[in-house]
Image 1 (cartoon, rainbow, N blue to C red):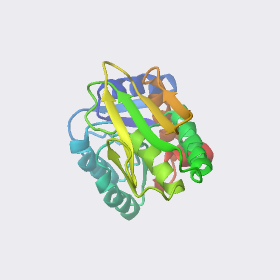
Image 2: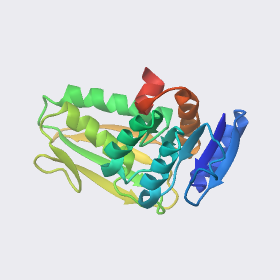
Image 3: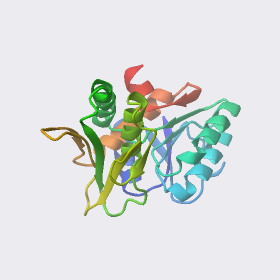
Image 4: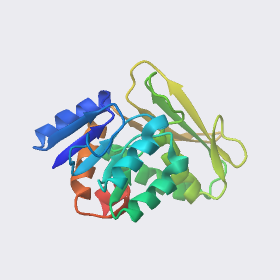
Length: 233
């Protein structure tokens, strides 16, 4: 495949290396805005940029009828509009708050545990995420996905917030620490014990490999997708 990388920071460089190892051709490495010329007739775009520019980056690529794999978090209030643009242009869009295989298994485990625990109100639920100090959004997209998975399965909660869990709002602690790639924990605490599930990333390589696998999977498809479609469909 011919892949354009939109956002060529640390993640972009790792994706470049892994995609090349898997015999794909990188036809664009962009830190500037994409356009019909600098995308160089790519088969797919992998977008890891910044929340401030992600919407316009994705919109441009979709309007050029190029499928987009997006791992940028912090812009999701505009995601419904992007999904509409993908449909109007008969192309495809896949957003992942986290492309790691382990994290997507963790998402499934989180929902299963939430369903098991919904009838045990003595357990208070709290989320925690730790990331490197350069991460611009808080909480992480992964933490938000975990919170949404709990809220979907436990009607005690109507939403989430950055703080301790109180009343109908599920709490998320967002910690920024050195060069941590990403650690996510879900705690169920009662007066007598605690249940914890946790995912720890050791490097960014798992995220990058998942993004390339998603790009391989989406070729020839139209519609709006997630990593659940890639891994479990």
